[in-house]
Length: 309
Image (cartoon, rainbow, N blue to C red; front, top):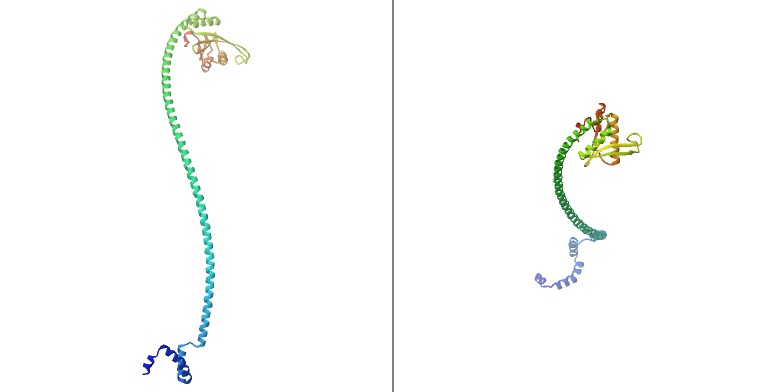
């Protein structure tokens, strides 16, 4: 019955019943009070436990606050370092972009310079190619001209060779006439007079053989011929461009050869000509003079038939 009545009480009625009856029951009924204390001691903490718990909570709060402060300080340091790193990174990025811009400009400038140099190089190569072609053409032209000149020289040389052969044949014929004439002249005068023989020889060479005989006379101021200033005289035969020096004496020695050689050198120097051959005609030759005459290039003749022009 009681349970049924209790079950019919509302929550509000129970709360009101406890509030009104609970203090009276605890005060008046000792067993209920002790039982309630045992139940509460098992269920609720004691004052000392609560104090300890509160102290522990306070320490935990203080530790938490300290850690929070440290965390905030560390976070502030990290934030400042992060900001500093961000600023440094931004500064480096700005510097990097500036450097990249400088490198880009330098690269563009190098590209332009390289292109300009390449253009100049191609122009120079074109000029060199044109010059090379021109030189090749000129070389080919010169080679052709050289061939033509060589061919002309060859033909001219052949012609001169033929003319030389004809001239040699003519001179051989003339020489035979000269030999016989000189032989007759020598037999007529017997070489007794050098002057007479010289005059007769000049007449034969001029009138009969067509040579031009001249009597060279020059004055040696320096004394290179005789060792002192003196008149230099010598017979010279000229035909075309050939010059022959002739000395005629009744006898010839080594000193006569040396004197004749000096006369020829003086004549070449003063007249600016080249003597092609040197004849020394004498019936009597010193044997010691033969070797010297060969070394000097002087042709010795003791008989008119020995002379070869």
